[in-house]
Structures are given as structure tokens and as C-alpha cells.
Image (cartoon, rainbow, N blue to C red; front, side):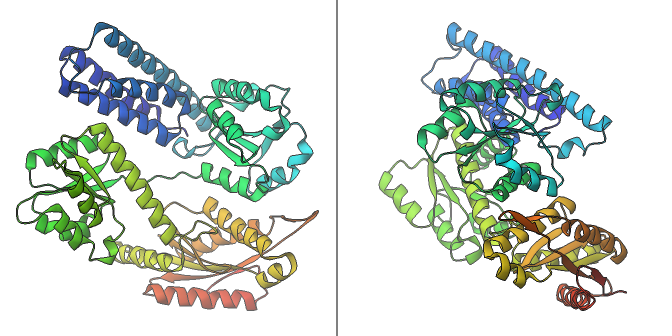
Length: 534
């Protein structure tokens, strides 16, 4: 992923600043600040997928954490200071070199009218294999979605035109296993900003270890069908701008709660503080956190009592609760977790460990929510979450004024596709339309698999005429996609119906009107878009 050079340099500067503060005032407290800033930079690099810098930052983090102990005397011994200084300086040099390369690539994107730099995640795609014919199906499917892949064999070098951040698809099955590590390491060294995906790897511990430890980003196992490879590439191309992690701090001590907040801020985690545990439910509903950090012993009630009260509400049943307490009795800790908690951290807490626990718990919680609210086949919103999101969007548009267009779209003669080619092929046709919609629609548009082969689309600040232009282009492009079946292919088409607010005032009314317009498009011969405003 290409992140703005200024942001990368700013993050690294925070590490350098904390190191200089420690050198000026070598205390345990300033060393804690250094450890947290290095941890924050490492997490940032992982999130941005900057592999070349992540390894160096991770090694610096490991060295720092090995010295993270109150028994260690400060200032550190001279040998340790020299080692840390050398690592901090080396990381800064690598970061500046990486930022300059990124700035050059962004300038190239602007000069050649590529998408905006903020949205560039994967560069030019190259397939490295021995026999191109083995991958003809993959190359064809890439072309259907507007992507092309250059091809070279293992005994050729990638040209300079590959750029600095290519997406490399490596056919490992066509390369002797003894050469894997050296070849991957060589490509990783040359393309530190690129994405390396190994194809055709067996589900074998040694093979996977060789590929991953050599420096590839991910492995797709032997037998992975072309559509699954395409889906993986599409996910890399999508920009997932996650909302900041949100933590509710329930702690009666104002000093302790602000120390926790400052620790979380190092990793850009947003927090809200509740000093009176009796206000926890109100704060949960207003702040909508991803996780609760809670003291065990507070006036009026204990953390366990608060957790049990929280768990009486269905909407908070799966929300992680992490206790922070000076309690060291293991039996009491076990009881606390049995009665509603998920983890127990003793005070004084290690700030790096606290951030790591919080972030890993939130990642799993969000993954669980995604599985609840998204369709498993396409990754789009499911029926109920799509309708709920439409209602919320409509509420905002009603308040602000303007238009909101709703489109119901489905695949023509889909039962015939299933009957003729089989349900797995039918599923792939559904995925193809969902990928095309994700490519063409905006981040703030609603995209939902409404049921079967039918999709619900919400286009805020878009009138019927604009909606028609957007959806009709998607319809035309979908009709050109060649869906592979055995040694041949077939085509499929889609139809759509449009309804627009304020002509229709509620979410249900918009969906009903769009559905009726879709029916009119079907009656009119299919493979067309009809607007109920016509």
C-alpha cells in the first residue's frame, strides 16, 4: 500500500523524538514512552503493509521490549545505548528512502492520470511462471475486470517498467523447491513496497514456511481456482479505511484513566472515560465502543457487577471486556472472567502489552461483526444490515436535503444459469457482479446482496438521471464479462430498477418502487435499467 510520505515521516519522527527525549532524560518513564512509540510505528507499518520497513521496526521493538523492566537501571549500559541508537538511525534512513520512493511513484501516478495516490494500493501486476498456458484462465478473468498482467518466465528479469510497487503472482509449482527462498528474497529486496503472492503452494508446513519466511505476503494453496485468486487481488485493490478503534474506559481514578487514554492515543485509539460506573450503559449507547477497559474495584460497585449488568443487553453480549486491576489472586481473576470478562491485566500495566491486547481483541470483535452483517459469498452487506444502513442514510439525507437514489438490480435468467452450468458457476456469476459493483461505486454508497441474485444499491446525493448513467454503464460492462465453463464460456446480463427520494419518502417505499421498476425492466426485455420516475 502507498501511504502519504508525510504521514510515514511523521510517524517515524515520533520514534526519533522519543529516543532523543530518553537520551536527554534517561528514566524508566521516558523509556516507557520510547517503547510505546516504537510499538505504535510497528503497528502502523503492519496496517499499511510496508514490509520493507516493518522488519527493521519489529527488530527494534523486540530489542526495546527485552529491556523493558523496572529492574533495568537507567541510563542503559553504553553497549545497549549504542545498539539502540544505531537501530533508530537505520530505521530513520530506511523510512526517508522509502518516503522518497513513494513520493516518486505518486508523482508518476499524477502525471499519467492514474487514480488518486490515496487510493493506490497495488501497482502493475506481473505473473512469473514457466508455462503461460497454465494461467490462461487467470489472465482472461483479470482482463474481464479491467486488470492486465505482464508475463515473464523464472529465467527472465522483471523490466524497469514494473515500477517500485508491483503485484507479483509467483507460480511456485513451476520452480524447484530448493530455489524458493532465494528467489523470493531477491524479489522482496528489489520490491520492498510490492505485494508478493505465491501460487500453487501445497498445504505443507515446510513449503508454507519457506514461502512466508522468504518474504512473500500471502500464499494461495495448490488448486485455488482462478476466481478465488481474482477475489484475493480485488481485496488488495480495495482500500479498507477502517474507522479508528474505540475504547470505553471505566475507571474511578481520574489520574489512572487519563494515563490509559494517553497510552491508547499512541496507537490512534479513540477513548471515552467514565469515572462513575453507574453511567456505563449510557456511555455504551452514546459512544458505541469496540471494547471496554474496566477497573475491578470502584466505589458503588465492582467491575464484575458492571460486566454482569452489561451482559444483560443483547447488543453488548459479544463486546470484549478487559479488566485492569491490582488484583493478583488468580482464583478471583478466573471468577471475574467467568462472570462476563474476556481478559485480565494487572496494574501497573505494560503499555505496549495493553495496546497489543486491546487491538487484537478489537480486530476479532470487528471480524465477528463483519460476519454477522455481511454476506458470506460476496462480502457485501446482507439483507437486514443493508436495509438498516439505507434507513440511516435516508435519515441523514432527509436532514441535509438532496436526493437519494435506490437501485434494485438482479441477474437475468439466473435459474437457467444454475440449471445449465451448476450452482458453483452460478455463485461465481454473482461474485462477478458484486466485484464489478464494488469497483464502480463510491465508498459511501450502499451495496447489499438483498437475496439470491438480487442486489440493493443506495446512491446518496444522486438523482434519478445520475443514478441511471452509473448503473447502466455497470449493466453494459457486466454483459461483456465472459464467464468460464469447462473449455468454453458464456455471457450473462442484468437488469435494474431505480427509485429516488424525495419522490418516495421511506426506505421501504424506495425499495418497493425500485423493485417495481426492476419488474418493468424485466417485462421490457431484460438487460436494461428502468426508472420509476420515467
